[in-house]
Image (cartoon, rainbow, N blue to C red; front, side, top):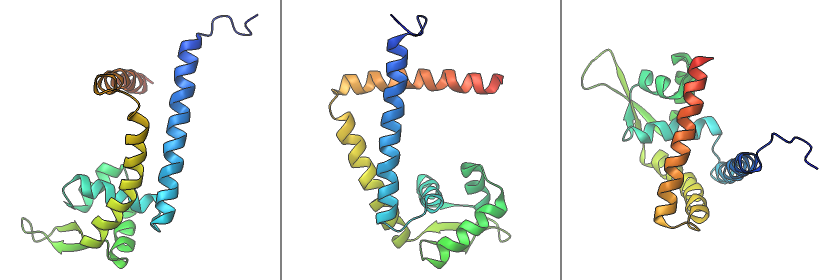
Length: 153
C-alpha cells in the first residue's frame, strides 16, 4: 500500500538523488576550502574574478556576486591583505579601480577548484560522453523551468 498514491517514484527518486549529489559536492567543496584556508565568500569572490579572466571592476564583481558594492569592498580589502588580489588604477578611466587576481590568488583558487573538479569528473565519469551531454541537457531544461517559475512568483 502506497502512503501517498499520487507520488511519482521516478520524480521523487530523481529529486532525492540530485539533493544527495549536491550535498556531497558541497561537503567536498567545504573540505577543500578548509584545506586551503579559504572562507566560502573568499572563494566565491576569487571564482567570479577568475571567471572574468582575472580582472574586473568592483561594480562588476558586486553584480556577479549579487551584493552591494560596500560588501564587495570589504571582501576585496580582506583578499588584498592576504595577497590574493590587487587593486590598480584603471587604464580606461582614472576615476575607476580594477581588481586583479594575483598569482597567489590564482594558485589558491585553482587548488580549491582542483579538488572539486576531480570529484565532479569522478562522479560523472561513470557516464559516457553521450550520457553526460543528455544529462546536462535535461538538467538545463529543469533549471529553466525553475527559473521561469521564480520569475512568476
